[in-house]
Structures are given as C-alpha cells and as structure tokens.
Image (cartoon, rainbow, N blue to C red; front, top):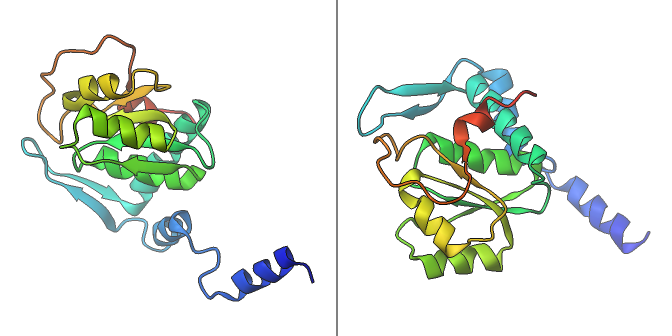
Length: 176
C-alpha cells in the first residue's frame, strides 16, 4: 500500500471524516429547516431571522456568485467587516466552495489589511461601506470589492470609493 492510500485509510477511519462545515450546515438545514439559525438585531431597525433553510439558500447563492467571479477551492477572500449577517454568510459561502475567508480586525489600519490580503493572496474582498476606502487604499489591485448595504445595521453615509463595487445583495440574488 502506498503512502497516499495509507493516509486515506487513516482519514477514512476518523469518525468525523467528511463532516466539514458545509456538511454540518446541510445536516441541520435538512433536519431542522424551520429552526432559527441566525437572529440579527441591528443597531437600528427591525430584528431579522434566518432559518437554517433560508441561511443555506443564501449561502449557496453567494457561493455560486463568488464561483462565477472565479473564486474557487484554495482561493482566499478578504472579509473586512464588523459582525453582521453578510459577514457570516460570506464566511460560510467561502467554506462551501473550498475558499478561505480571511476575516480581519476592523480596527486594523491600511498597512495591516494590506499585509493580511497580500500574504494570503486574496483574490477579492467583502466589506462594509465604512471600510471601503480603507480596503481600496490597502489593496488597490484586489480583483473585486463587494459592499454590504449598510454598516452593521446603521445607514451607510461614507463617500463612495473610486472603483466599481458589487452590491452584496447582487450575490444573494444570484441565480443558481
């Protein structure tokens, strides 16, 4: 038996083989589709709830939209965002397609964001309007920037950046 076959045999014996993040999410969406997965209480506005099924549906759409932009297995995607539903959806979408969500501290300065993005070879970024200028300054050559609609539930009031961005809502509206 060669080394690769021995390694696979060891992996197959591991009791959680194949039970990765997408598997876990699918498991709960199949068994408890109408149970709450995420409850978001924004700083202003109404509470929003995602059931397991709704969450999986949105993750799959965002994953498909990212795949359509060329993001695939092993790629890294910068997620520079405060806690928000979009951040969680983006992270799970990365896991769904085998990409790595590179989450960064929103208190990071441009040089730090540049370090994280360049040292992990990020192909794109998802961020909030309040951080768009910082992300553009930090990694001006990044493949694309996706912007959420608001800043963790507060209206976006920041000046637009001088490059085309993709609304996060367009990822959720992606046809499967």
